[in-house]
Length: 193
Length: 161
Image (cartoon, rainbow over all chains, first blue to last red):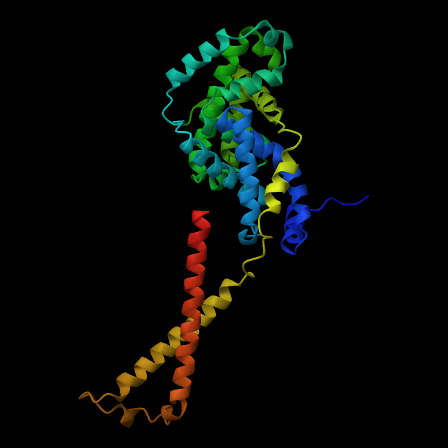
């Protein structure tokens, strides 16, 4: 059975002129980069634009990638800065949303909840819905920790924060996510857990 | 902030020392409310780990590759240099500069005691310090300076990107 090339091997191939290999890197990481972008942009069109921009930036800077670090951590750093630049351009103030405001936003959102969502009874859908209600930084940290296979140090590197700050933020994010799940699912939360 | 919930999360994440781990395990064993809280957090942890990633549109890779095709092919900007080599070279030059300075100071006519009486070192530095060797020394310094400047500029450009 042919062994899959590692990220570093693919990068070396691209750097030696086999640029088509970059498609394999894109395919390997696109779901995660897109999900991470979605945590900030909150809509698919913008997230896809951010993710696409991120892969083009990574391609252009591939020669300067220090091959001592994980490619994924480097890519997530680019995703984070690209998403922040994008949000700044769109003049969305993502950091000033208070807990109270998000709670109100959640209430409005759930009031528009239709029967179909309830009928789905899909724990993943509820989980994604609850994550979307988190602040972008919290949602990104949760996603990086659980799906990006990143350590606290690596998340800190990607988001330009100290690992201890990440630890505290991760704890708060999990608490908020738990509260939002309890609010969304009420009694059904036991089924999810 | 070191609540029992925080400790439980740290326990689940494996971030505790041996002593802390044993202490929290004892609490889980002895206190039913802590045990229930632990089970709840553990289940949440599993649920978070099972969250699904979103899928971009089917044409995503193709779109990226079309954009990428318009860019010049990336090339490795530098070969990795062992830091020890850089430190050795800089050490050599620092010592050389110090040597030259000492020689100059030694040859200036200060009203100092005549050291030659005490230290009969017969080292003819004039033969070593020819104008050519000085030019070579300064030339290498200049090249190193340019390499360092190039490194700083590249780093700045990288940060901007």
